[in-house]
Structures are given as C-alpha cells and as structure tokens.
Amino acid sequence: MANAEQYKPDCGMEDGFELYSDVVTKSWIVTDNLIKITRPDGRVVTPYIKHRRGRTFICEGDYIITDEDGTHHACGEDIFYTRYEKME
Image (cartoon, rainbow, N blue to C red):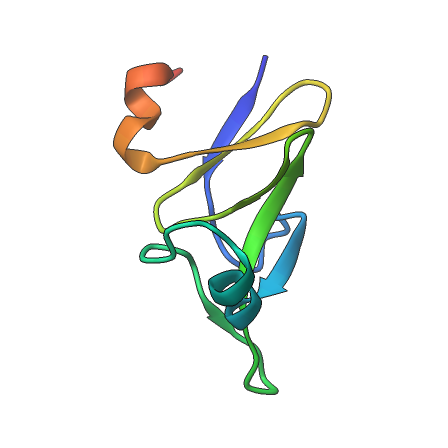
C-alpha cells in the first residue's frame, strides 16, 4: 500500500534541493508553481524527488506518494483525488 501526503517544507519529504536559478536556466519545465524556499544565506532552492526517470521538482499543492519499496512520486493537487481515493 502506498502512502500519500501533501508536501510540507522542512519535513524531509523531498530527496534534495536544486538552486532555483539552475532550475530556471537549465531545465525545460514550466516554473510558475514551483516551490521556492529561501535559505538563511539568501539562496533560493526548489525541492525535488528522485525516481527512475530522474528528478521531479515539487510544485505548490503537490502530494508526495511513497510506495512500499520507498519509491517517491509527485502528483498535482488538481488530479490527486481523481487518481486516488481517500482512506478513512
């Protein structure tokens, strides 16, 4: 059974962080809704999860799904409940 939680910063749900400036300049993704965290030294970073296809950067409202084998997936809030049902 998989576990899913809406992403919360500083809770260890991500696998790492990338400088936001690198994401913007080196990636071919839409950056409009990416989470941006400002570090005490002023650097702005974006959290990501790793999977077999590479990295997925986490956006506002994303759910992080953890499979039984520890694999992570991100799912947008807009489609989460169309793919998964809430367990009581």
